[in-house]
Each structure stands twice: as structure tokens, then as C-alpha cells.
Image (cartoon, rainbow over all chains, first blue to last red; front, top):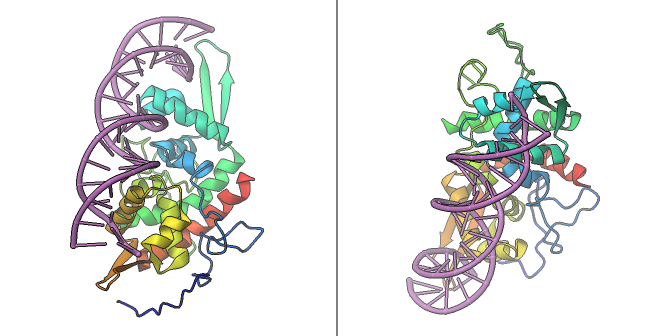
Length: 136
Length: 136
DNA sequence: CAGCATCCAGGGAGATACTG
DNA sequence: CAGTATCTCCCTGGATGCTG
């Protein structure tokens, strides 16, 4: 498995696997080999989704759609109310889910996916299914 | 790989969004609506990838392939050596990357993607590109 | 019912120094 | 060069009580 590689990397290493997520911005082609341009950022939506329970919350909303707060608490019992609330806020801030409030008594709130959220779900599905498959 | 999941056998009365990652295990059909069965787990590979810089490290390895420790440090300057080391260990434990050590002087170590890692990269690409696009 | 404010504990991540 | 070892620190996340 050890493949011989010559130390031909003088300074500018431009040899890279093609079509990898680590590509530069969609507009350009420079990778970090060309500069200090970053790859998959640790910020933004990825960061949000990486937080604890974020993915579960997102999936639960998508599965229940619409989902009420209590439903989500039942679905993800390990997450505390505050955590759940935080994740919902963050997902809403990313415009992946939408919050619908009904001023009734008792109060009712429903969370549902936005179009963006649905799109994300589509791109997420093959990934999650693959990950699931290899867990076992 | 087209996936048809129209095989919903009208299992339960509760209808849910179609084809969402929040499905039960691939083997079964029960969703959390049916029980407390969990959806996207917060454990395993997902947890590993969710850690800080994990995705960057993974992408950087895939982009450089093979990647040396120093290269990765340069590529992801925000991550400390210990963090980088941790992420590499974890990714290796998940068998997404492979570590190749050459007992030379000076010592040399190369990280490269495994086949599994490459598969993950493929499934990750559309997601990352989409995320990138909407960040702006 | 929904969810925020507060407080607190744990662990992950950063910085640095040191070794094979 | 390629990491470990250690220490601290901050942030995340858990628990609870209270409000609209």
C-alpha cells in the first residue's frame, strides 16, 4: 500500500485529487495550495449543523413537518429544552426551518422546513444513509 | 444510484415527509413516531465529522493526497497541533484516512484517503458545494 | 404549552514545551 | 519532521424555575 512518492514538491504543490470538496470558491479554481484560501469552512451552516443534536433536530422537523416543540422534545429526549431551543433558533437563523406561531390558548408553535431546508435534506440523504450503513 | 423509497408499506397512520434522512434504520421502517427509535444519530462517524476542523482536515487530506503533517498545519493554520493530531487520529479510527509512516531521517508521515474516505468525499461534495453557494 | 433566563459542570480546543 | 504531554480556558450543553 505504500506508494513511492518522489519529493518533487519543491514549493508549489499543485497536484490534487480532482473534484474534491476541498476546491476553492465556485468562482475560482485556486485551492489552498495556491494560497491560504480555505477549504470547507468551519463556519456558517456547517458549524450550525455540526452542533450537538442539530442534525437530529433538523431531521425530526423534516420528518414530522410540521413539528411542535413538545413533539421534538419527545423525539429527542436526550436534548434539554434549552438545547433544543438553541438548535431551533440556530436552524431558523440559517433559514433551514421556519417558525410559525399561533396566538391561541394554549399557545401553539409549529416548525417546518423551508425550501432551503428541504434542499439540504435532499443532499443530506445519501450521505446519512451511507453513514448509517457502515455504522453496522 | 437512484434510490426509490416508494416502498412505504403504508406502515403507520402518521405520514411524514417523503424520503427524509430521518427515516428509521435501513432495515426497518419505524420512525420515532412509531417509537422512541432514533433518527440521525449523534454518534459514530457523524460525531467525528462534526468536530471542529474535522471536515477541513478531511478535505485537506483529500485535496493534497498524500498530505504530510506540516502541509496540513499550513493549510489549516487555525487548528493547533494537538487538535490537528486529534482529528487525524479520529479520522483514521473511522477508517476514512490512512496513515503511512516512513522510518527515515527526518521522519516522514503521509496521510491519504481510504476507499471509504473517497466514497464519503463523493457523497459530501454536492452538500458542501451547495452550502458554499448559499453562504454568499 | 412553549421557551427563555440563570446557573453550573464537563469536555473540547488552544498554546506551549518537549521527544523520537 | 511529526507529533505527544500538559495545562488552562472557554463554550457548549444540562437542569431548573419562571413567564406569556
